[in-house]
Amino acid sequence: MTTVALLDSARAPLTAQPYYEQGDPGPIVAALAHVPEVLDVALPFIGTLLGESAIDLRTKELVILRTSALLECRYCVQTHTVVARDAAVSLHQVRALRCEISLKEAFDDLRDQALLAWVDAVALGPGTPAETAAATLAEQFCDADIVELTLLVGATLMLNRFATSLGLPTSAATLQRLATEGLT
Amino acid sequence: MSIGVAEAVATGQMSGRVWMYSNYHCNLACSYCLTESAPKVPARLLDAQRMRRVVHEAAELGFTGIGITGGEPFLLRELPGLLAEFGQILPVVVLTNATLFSPGLLRRMAPLAELPVRVQISLDRPDPVANDEMRGPENFRNVVEAIPRLVELGIGVRIATTLEHDEIRRGPTDDHERLCALHRQLGVSDDDHVIRPIVARGRALSQGMGVTATRDDLEPELTITNDGAFWNPFAPTVVDGRLDTDLLLTRTTTPLRTPAAAMLRLISGRPAGTDSTLGIR
Image 1 (cartoon, chains in turn blue, red):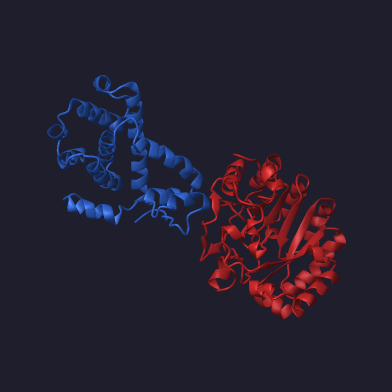
Image 2: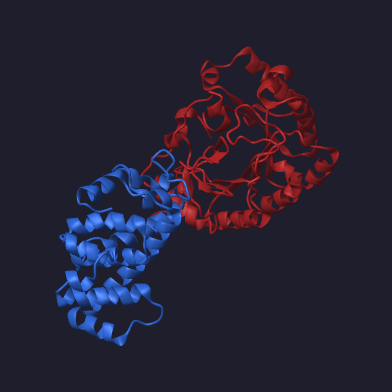
């Protein structure tokens, strides 16, 4: 049960209508549409961070799915399990990101390991991440990547708490896809 | 923003008037009310400080007038004083059912005669029975008593008649002629008589009344409520107790430049007069 009404196209404010032009924009937009001036700045921000950029989508999905699993965000875990699979993350790796098996079992690439250690440190906090995690990350990624990936963890945390607190529903298509892949 | 408020107003792309819903509650419960206003509905008050800020910022941005509506604005005891304040900044029109103009209230309104503050009063029919059927008992009597008193004080009065769209399209009827004779007799000229269609929103929609009005039928006329800023005063309607959000611009009302900028973005490239299809102004 969602905490707030999710606005459909008929109830969406004038200033939110562009987000509905391609059909159902999903529950995050349908909730944010209550405050269209926030939607207007949040969506480009989220889209820029989560979408294609100098960092490939697979790397981003490792960050998003892992963070969401650590925060136990049902909506984001389910939704980004599908996105991660589409971004060439293996089923085995998805299970590890979702905390179902250990990361060591699924990730043998040093770059992935450094990134996931950083994600765990940033997402779980509190306080400054361990210097070893930062140093290992810096061996694998440039400063610009570190900035973007760290901000991606932060944005995912924000979305995790937003989706979980409001009880946003997972789409039927996503649930069907998860069932097909033997995931929930 | 690509153009400013003053330019958009000067070119007729948007109205120069900023409307404020001072409150949503009302001593009447008219059958076609856009906002389901009635004595016991949530008041949704726009507090005095917020209204003051809107008026000041409206003047700074280049708006040219203020409108106050409700609900019944005169249920707010401080309204005459606020109208006097606002009238020193921008011309004001306040909409009312004119049923609350006691001698005491009229005394407090007397200073408004010196200011560009006008009172727009709803009067739909020239007969008490037909008028009060839609608007409630004693409405007609109260209105015809109040208008001459306001005119006598020197306060500008406009009459607003709200009818089904089909009735307006059929042209003047005997009722219309008698209504015009009545308002002239009460001291209100033809120039100060506006006729508007019932819009199928709010209680009118629930009652199967009114004409459908989309965004393109409604003049861009920035409207501030306690719930946010809207496209037009016909926008922040209520159905079954739930606020309509389809014509919401922003939840932010102040600073006024936030909803004004949203409005300007929406009207960019929109020809002046696009809203004239239903004559709702």
